[in-house]
Length: 106
Image (cartoon, rainbow, N blue to C red; front, side, top):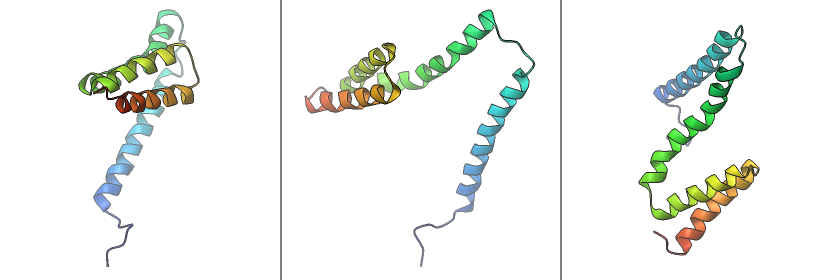
């Protein structure tokens, strides 16, 4: 009888490999930058990197979905610009998608 929690070795190895790769990239960044003093333009560039990566990941999804999702993304971005807490921004985003879809915005 096949149980609910069947172990698939290729999946387990893939998950462990991805975890190791993620950990290695984080640690290597810390090790490479440990002797570097980050100031000025370099600090500004490094500070701008997380939002730009997030935008690069989210933008295709926002533009390839329906109008409700696109409008909700704009509403969520405005909430984030106002520096609301992360949980509030998430609730506003999900709530706006739900409300726009309930209103029939397709």
